[in-house]
Image (cartoon, rainbow, N blue to C red):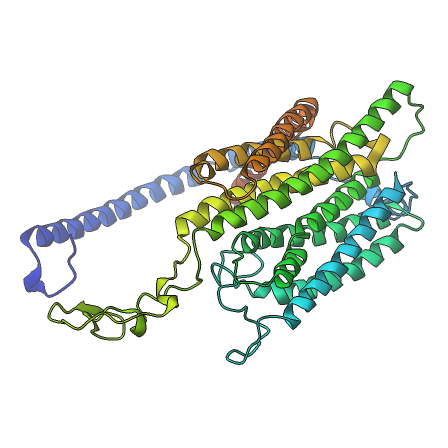
Length: 495
């Protein structure tokens, strides 16, 4: 019960509880002081009656225990030696042969062409954005009813119109960095491959996060657009998952190949045949995933368009209110039952319907899960084509795990939200393409997880070693503090 307020508002229970609390605090303080005085007398008498030899022996045993703990810590978590750090410069300058370099170059050129297309489409869209006599064109705003909502819960951008400046800045930057990646492929060394991997990873993570925003923009597109404006918006936003997948695959391939030297092994005809089949299947799944993502986004966008026709509801505007609905103040209204005037005609905006938040959440959840599955499929397909013979089961474990998780989440999102809606336009191909893509991702991801399970076991062992190392390190700190206290006690005995 609260005791805040004037004293005459306090109930009897509050007063009794406050008094008992004060008494309990006083008893606790008195007991603590009494126990401290007794303990200090016992410690002082014990130190004065002993010569200090026991303290020295205890300190020696403590130091021996600390040295053993340090040895255990070094065995659990081995750190690089000084000699290995001195040879770091030689290791970074070692030459490396980049496997399937033409595939890397083609991927970078494809990313550069995609950046040019997105930049041009966004500029063109800004130039033709809805201008008329009543409304002037603005760079940071879209025409009315272009999107279902002007704001989304994005990561890179908050307002839908933020995509314009993001695309206009990010695509030229990515284009320039692609030229840097091509230059780093000449005379590849460990250092150049690591730099290429880090640059590609940074760009890939940015476009990966931005794709979470653009997939929401696409499904929220409206119908009150010209065909040219609609196409330009799709061209400026649809290829972003492709860019994210290409750069992440380049980063993963460079980092993996920089850690392993290529060995000249003679592959049998069976292995060469299996590798050729794997590359062909990777190319097929690459284009299948792109087609599925494009079809899925268009079908979902068309379905969502049936649930709204205006960005903002005008129910409470003055010209949209009924005659017996009178304004009370700026925000509240009151219902006047005495009004008998005839109903007046209302403008068309009064009959608009805004998108329900629950409907938007259902379609957004499925679109994001399907986006992750598509991007993982694209990364995996590009990785197989880039690495070729140098690809191993261990390198496929992480993409396989992500692919399996994305497929499971897509299935959950479909049956938990999307199955209750009547999908508009091409619903049957939508089910076929998404079913094939999802089941393939589920099976392929599960196979890669099983075959590369040793990586997961190694990861668990490393995590267990780190946890044990933290515990041993904490124990070392405690024992070191205890050793310092023993030294202080020895000095006190001498004095």
